[in-house]
Each structure stands twice: as C-alpha cells, then as structure tokens.
Image 1 (cartoon, rainbow, N blue to C red):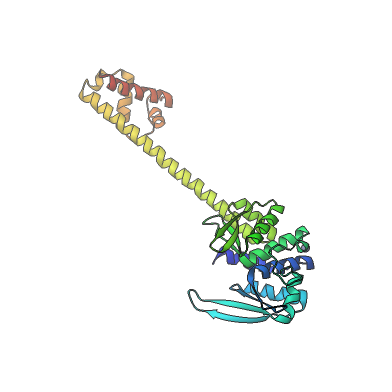
Image 2: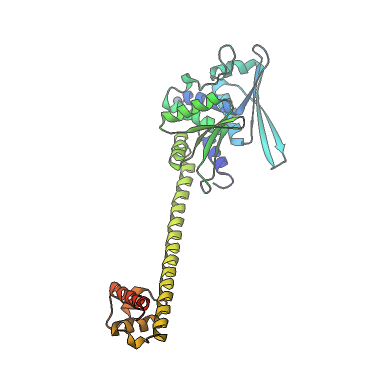
Length: 311
Ligand SMILES: [Zn+2]
C-alpha cells in the first residue's frame, strides 16, 4: 500500500468484478456520474467523456460499458508531464449511443435532462447500493493515508447528489457528513470505524487490513511511548525529591549537626547521602534492618519536618 493510499484502494476496488448485472449497472452509473462530463448539444445530441488518471478505473469503465451495452468507448491516452508525470485516460461515448445508455443508467431522464439523484431503481437491492458506492468512490473518492489522519471523502458537483450519497451510506449505518469546498460538495467520513465499514462494504478488504495494521502499530507505538515517558517522569520525580532531601540533610549537618537527630533519622540521612539516585523503596531495602517503602518514606518526611521546624 505504498504510493498513495487512495490509489491503492482504487486499484483494489477497480479489480472487483460484480457477479450480478444489477450491481454492474449500479456501479457503472455511479462511475460515469462522477467521472464523466456530459456534453449536451440540443435535442438528443449527447456525448460523454471521462477523464481519469487511474488506469484501472479507466479500464473498468471501458469493460463495464462493453459488458453491459456491447459498446466500445473510444480511448485516448495523454501523457501529462507536469506538475507530476502521469497518464490521463480519456474515454468518449459518441452521440448515437450515449443518450440511450445514459438513460438506462439513470444519468439522463426520458427528456434527456440530467438527473441529480441516485437512481432508485438501480440501488433497490443492498448489493446494488454497495456497488453504487464503490463506483462513486472510484469516480470521486479520496482517502487519506491512515498513518496521517482518518479522512475519506467523495466529491460531487451537485449538493443533491452529495445528500443522496449520504443517505445511501446511512442505509448501511454509516453516518457521513456533507460539506462544501469551493464548487465541490463533499460527503465525508472522519472516524476509523466508519471508514473501514465503508471500505469493507465496497469490497476493499486489503485497504481495511492496511488500516487495521496501522491502528495496531499506532497503539503499540503509543504504549511504548507511554512506558518510556512514564519511566522518565518517575526518574525525574525521584531525582527531584532526592535533591531536596540532600539539601535538608546538609542544612541540618551544618546547623545542629546530624548527631542531634534521633538514631532512626541519622540512619536514613546517611543512606540518602550514600545513594542520591535510589528510589524510596530501594533506600528502605538497603537499610539494616530493611525498611518498608512507607517506613522509609515516613522517616524522610520527618527529616524534612525537622529541618522546617528549625531544631
Ligand atoms: Zn445488485
């Protein structure tokens, strides 16, 4: 799943061949709706061209159109050198066949007006709804690399289509949001569970695996970081406390003198001076006889109190 995560997902989804004709119709309808540009010149003068940077997607449009309608789209490949070198695939459907095919695909109505809805008759069955979403993602989808953020979106040119895609996702309990960016309308998902649900629904299981592997790795990394930070924090706390105790002990020594302390406190003071980096537990364990952590801690507190009370 190198290069871009989106390209990886689209390549995987483009390889899926829906078994049923109903699903293939739904998928091609969404693909042409989102990838295609319609040219309508007067009555029944309709042509369609699509432009894709993704060879697998272009191949899929070509193949589905041929399978479903027996039509060969004309194909053109353009090599685009800048800003990054890539191929652009142009598919063209001419006037004589375009109107009929686009009408059957629910992209044009019987009067050859553009339809801004998800065609209900094509997505009635749940298998077809999922296929339509796959086509829509292949046509206008983007998904961020899961190493960076959780974000999947499908961009469409009309607000109604965005809302209908949102409703179609809701049928599968995937709660998407809709927003506008410049002149595009976006249906988007922001949480990993929703994104993986949609990817799985569309059939992108490798992508789901990649996302879940990334989530496991991230959790592992966070756990390790927490452990490391936690150790450092504890060590810092020990050192800070020890520094304060040593200051106290030195003040007492140069004042009343350590011999003025009760024997128990003299003993812990000597231990602390010998072991400035030891934790309270280690300090207690090193005494003769050994002290529990709380007993050692109690003696250290009495030392500090002794210093604070001034005698
Ligand atoms: Zn179906």
